[in-house]
Length: 220
Image (cartoon, rainbow, N blue to C red; front, top):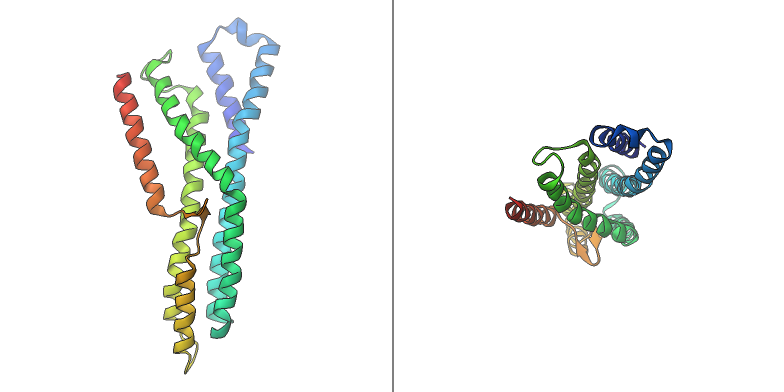
C-alpha cells in the first residue's frame, strides 16, 4: 500500500512546486492527476510486491526441505522430497516469468528516461520530486531480480548440505545417489528455460549502467 501512496504524494507535491498555482488549485486537475498517478504508478509496485511474496515463499520452501532432511527425512526419501520441491519451483517460475520479464523491460526503459529528465528537465542537472516514483520502481524491480536469483543460489548449496549430513551407518552410497540427483536436477528459478543466477543479474545491471553512462555522455 505504501509505494502507490508515496508516488501520489510525490507527484502532487512536484506539481505544486513546478506548475502555476491556478492550475493546481483546480479540483478537477488535481483529482485527475492523483487518479492517474495512483493507477499507473500503483500497477508496477503491486506486481513487484506479488513477485516478492512468491520468491520469499519459494525460499522458505527450500529452507523447510533442508530442515526436514536434517531432522526427519530418511536418506531414501531425500530424492523423492526434492523432486516435489523442484517441481513446485519450476511451476512457480513458469507462472510468474512473464511478469518478471515485464518488470525487466520496464526497468530497462525507466532508467534512460530518468537520465533524460535530469539532463533536459526544468531543473537541469538537479533531481526533482517527480523522479521519486521512478526511483521506487527501479529499486523494486532490482529487489525482485535479486530475490529470484537468490533462489537458484540456494538450490546450488543444497547438495553440499545433504552431503555433509550423516544419515547413519551404511548410508553413504544412498546419500551420494541423493546428492547426485539433486545436483543433476539443476533446480532453481527459471525464466523461459534459463536459470536465473546472481551472475546474470550482475551482468544485467552492468550492461544497464553502461547504457545509461553512454546516454548521459551523449546528452552532456
